[in-house]
Image 1 (tube, rainbow, N blue to C red):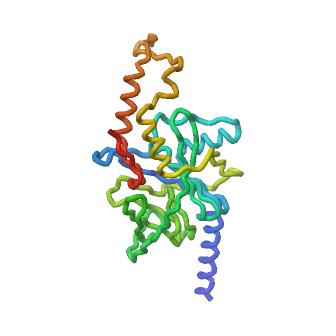
Image 2: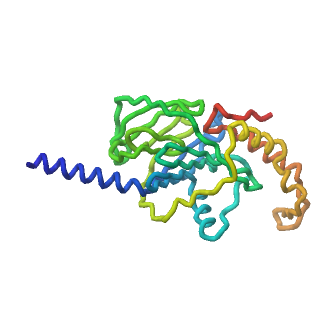
Length: 271
């Protein structure tokens, strides 16, 4: 009788956790290397918001911006370059449709790429505890990188950070073998919004289109604003003439120095 009672309590707890996970925010911290040749790393906090059969993975910045846009009609501005703060994924109908958002710097155009890759997971017997969760190891290839994941069946939700999904439990930690990208679950909260408030996009594009967008932006990063009336100031607050040539070269330098995209197989080589 005691064994049966324990089993029933365990099942009730598992079902309760699973039901809760259907409307939950899983918060991940990403540690990544902007430059693969450097040991310097950066951190970004991302939210995986799960609501029923939909989910959205985006940075805290984009999440707040999406909420503002839904409520006020406008959000925060975009960055000056394509970067890892723009990792933004929407999954629909469970995981049957996965869309990667592309945000064009400065002009605020928003596109999506449909992720068609299938994840052929190799589940390994190795286990360990990460935080409060008992996890099991799995491996997969994606984006020209080999990834090592740790998932827990204590939360039987086939979800994970970024594009990853399909394991028999929530992905608690996943990193590529070179540790250029390392996602780890740091907190779980109730998802209290009525909707995901996912950003609207203008059209769907291909990876080749995305590469062209990046190349064009690198060639002329200031094409949309160089004829605008922009006021610059020196360190003393005095008005000075805007040096567009210097600004352009600084942007191009940053792009070259931070060219370590998560999808290496679609990397643009800048000269």
